[in-house]
Length: 139
Image 1 (cartoon, helix red, strand yellow):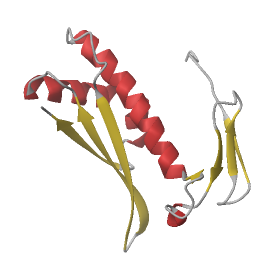
Image 2 (tube, rainbow, N blue to C red):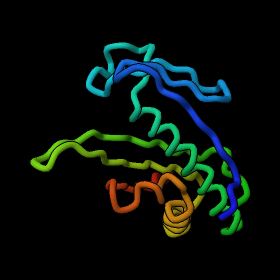
Image 3 (cartoon, rainbow, N blue to C red):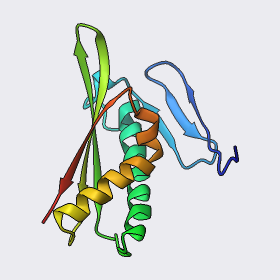
Image 4 (cartoon, helix red, strand yellow):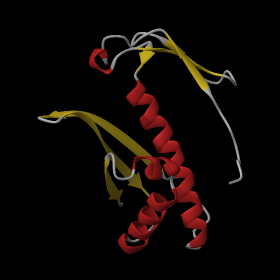
């Protein structure tokens, strides 16, 4: 195994704590997910997961597009919705990715999204333990 990068962040406090990356680019107060909407100056762990997943998937999509001969992805968007669900077995997360790729046909778009899902490190990390729904949005 070859390590290609490392990053770290530290959380202090309980569910109403603070998280900061060692590089200093993240420096945020954290609130519990159940309090979402009560404090617009703090984020939730799920919001951080959504942001990271969206960025990771966009990068994977860029790699997939290059192999399909598509070089410009400036106008793509990847929106990740994280839903906290509960059933008789307990609480769990569900992820929905809405991927907008302008100027591609449905077949190409689906191939890109599926290829990106195979490459994305967040998709790999959640495989078989979080339901991930993929939606291709077209013009």
